[in-house]
Image (cartoon, rainbow, N blue to C red; front, side, top):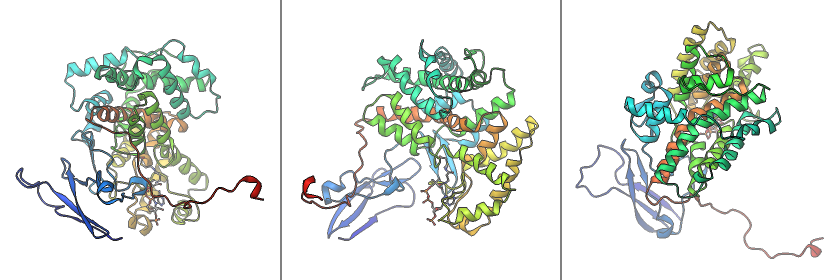
Length: 444
Ligand code: CMC
């Protein structure tokens, strides 16, 4: 069977209204079919293969979904070749510089920047929900102190669903979707802070509603009111992580949510996906790697060598990205912020010097250059998080707090997309063909 795919028209300006819809012709086993092409607002194109199996009997095979758009979305635009990231059209550089985290959450979820009044109402409605329901706080006493903070966060969020049974049914109304969103934006940071405090044997602190949400989170975690430089540094990190289109955790939230499971369990599943070291867990892995290299006498050449050696099982954490093939704009912003934040706080971190030297060497090395491996968002973020006092094993929790508005925006967008379907990929089976069952007694 041969398959030839010819997009009829893949470049050039957007066709005028009167042009016939674009299609791609696919020939499978001598039979040709025309498949529609969907064009996005940035002229990205996707061949719609929804009917391919019905028409030809074949499916598409794309391990890791490297070339598959699982949905259309109007939340985030990402161009990995040009290093562009925009939230609802706004460049990441601008929102990271000027916006508050609540503004970005509102923008991602509701599609536009809020007016002053809308933002005040939004943040007030979140603040009035900061407190966890009665009894929920006791959950933190039941985890062994060795439990990873991501496990505490994910299981506590699932447990929270028990207190909001009215928000867990399979067809939430728009008001109920909003109630879920506000509850999550308010209580996930509270859970994260309280999990930290109980793990460290510290008493729980009630929220301070006169602080900004970011400052309140730091207060609930550390007690004392934090320096503005610390609050601003965390604000920026949260915004830089707020959404990244169909990444592993967001796709998980959508996939779990597509079965009409409730948002508590969908987001908890997203937390599980995020935790992995190839995704959000990379920020913890980067610092652990830098510490190991530092303890090994800053012998970064040895680790670069190991990263290039496929038999070593070692990867340069914080390097490489499925989509960015030029540079990760978030990493550029964070690298610059590292110097500023550490300077403001009067901290000199030898790991920052090491990270910069590692980057310099890797970016001159043909292995990294030829594979287009550049520092990603996680390469420098841990240096800032360390500087502001966040323990290494809490880094992925910070990523999760940043990504929460993105997950909620995607969950909402999916639920409101007309005719959305349960996610259910196909496979190509490669196991044994039919064989006859042999009873145990005859198997020897
Ligand atoms: N160190 C060494 N080699 C690497 C690395 C790395 N960090 N990343 C990719 N490669 C190599 C890989 O071995 C492969 O080589 P070859 O073509 O010779 O087989 C080639 O580059 C392509 O890699 P891949 O694994 O096919 O690429 P992917 O798109 O499947 O994976 C990635 C992307 C981010 C999982 C991967 O680059 C990686 O493991 N990076 C380190 C972990 C990390 O920093 N993750 C955070 C990503 S950014 C935060 C987020 O949004 O999740």
